Length: 338
Image 1 (cartoon, rainbow, N blue to C red):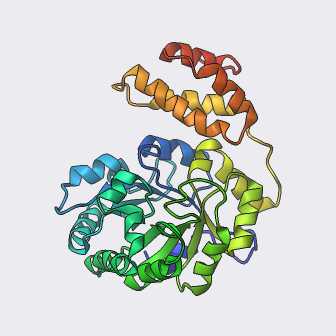
Image 2: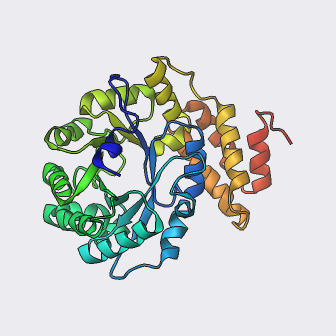
């Protein structure tokens, strides 16, 4: 895959065109979630949870556990490409593991410089590397060199910095100079976490200086947010994370507007409830029912943040601890075939 194919999969002359990626979210967006979200349509690519690389070459089963799509052409059942993400700091071992990913069929290797988790940062991973542009450069370079001759590009996901934005432009340039062929920028620092606002204008500053495609990420919850993020950042391409969980049809809504200029109606509670039921029905049957209930509540908690109706139902469902009762409550407002 070339730089061109990374940046122009659905691109055309229309001012409404642009790519939409599904973000990696550790412990939240797994293979089943990717399958469900991409079934709704609209996504051009998705990225796995990170493969944690320390000081060893990992066995293939580690990659296949986090990215079972490797055994199916590195695509979700709906045909959306799945890129494999690495997290680490040592150029040599990152490169070795990138070669494993390539041998298993990963179409793109993405690098994580954005994870804000304290545990990850304490162990010299994720956003911690944003404190040193030189280390970002060397990490990307290690993977880029390891993949030479394979045709597999390297991409990078960054934040605007660790404690502040002082090194934002330098880190982005370092990733590009190291060989990253696309940059996804979450428009906050590690310190800012997920607190609003997202600083889309800073992503625009990176885009202005970059010679590779830059994708804006952060606080794109609605079609209106999508318009504003594009206008403020100047980026044509976006990545959705929590927003895709909050509204599983957001990407499709954006795509419909791109193609027609029309706005689809807001997602109804009945549709959200049916989606959660479908998730529960397809989840690993070996998981304890209390874990399934916890996962459903986690998803519903994200949905309620930007939808008052989902918030009302969250209050109704939050105290339910038995899976059968939770599913029955979800079915109360919809008609589900046998």
